[in-house]
Image 1: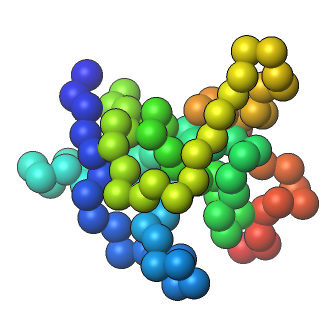
Image 2 (image 1 turned 180 degrees about the vertical axis):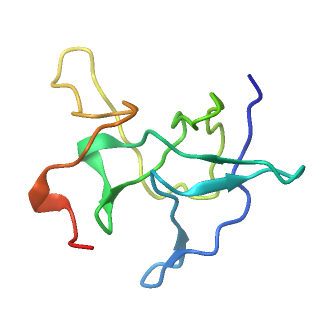
Length: 102
């Protein structure tokens, strides 16, 4: 397994000018290969109807996001608290009320 860091993304949240990467986005490697992000923040963060990708998110090829240009959000799951539904679970779909119609 090869680890990678997403270094460039053309999508921005204009209000804050933060980089955002979501489940379903494509990672492009320096050698030209690509892989899709398949897991994210789960119920904790949905951007435009898709889960936000975070450090620890997986790609289809088995790689894991290990770094981020964004540090404004933090997600914590505590041993004595409730689990975040869908956190880093490939295939998790947010509740219908959180999704934006296509």
